[in-house]
Image (cartoon, rainbow, N blue to C red; front, side, top):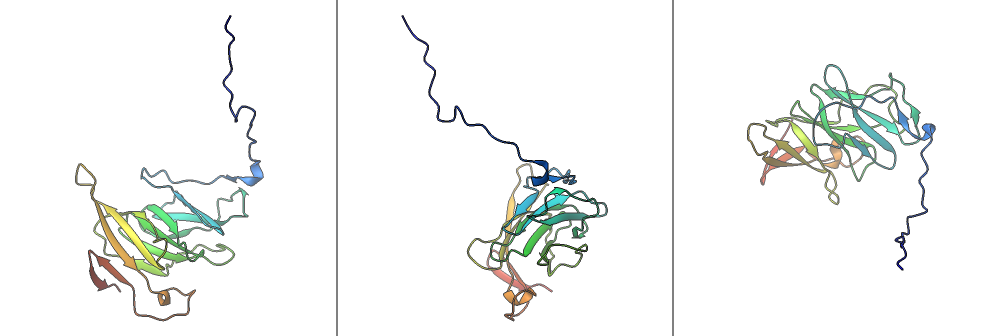
Amino acid sequence: MSRKVVRASKFRHVFGQGVKADQCYDDIRISQMTWDSNFCSVNPKFVAMIVDASGGGAFLVLPLNKTGRIDMSQPTVCGHTGPVLDIEFCPHNDNIIASGSEDCSVMIWEIPEGGLVTPLKDPVVKLEGHSKRVGILSWHPTAHNVLPMFTTCPCTAVRRVRRAWATCPRGAWRSTSVKSPGFTSSTRGSASPLS
């Protein structure tokens, strides 16, 4: 006589509990762009999300403790002329965020300590000169102020990725006190100053 044996599972009696509405973010118009991006970035102070915006690209930066229903008039970071494709917080400074866009530019922003009170339109640093849209941003995990940017070429069947490294000296940001010469960008070992 055979007995039916139920397979033992250590997760058999574990049940999840749903998060309450006041602990979630509600009524945020997330971007409808079809791009291979996370559309959000989080650090210990803020959460940032790319949102739909008319007349260019924008993203929303909220303090982590501001949850619940988000007002439609919440200030945004809006300086790009094309849709924003990727955003990334700096791992070394929680108030610095970079954004890449279809307008072939990368902008580095400094978020005020308490969050945005008015729309932020002027970046701290603007990197121009890319020939293609900037789709992927990722700060270097150990080197300060190093931002690799990836641009894709849509004219080829297989997407080829070109890599451009850009470094920003600490003096270019208002939040630091060290002074050094302007922003430099290098591609495959050649350096050239950007103005």
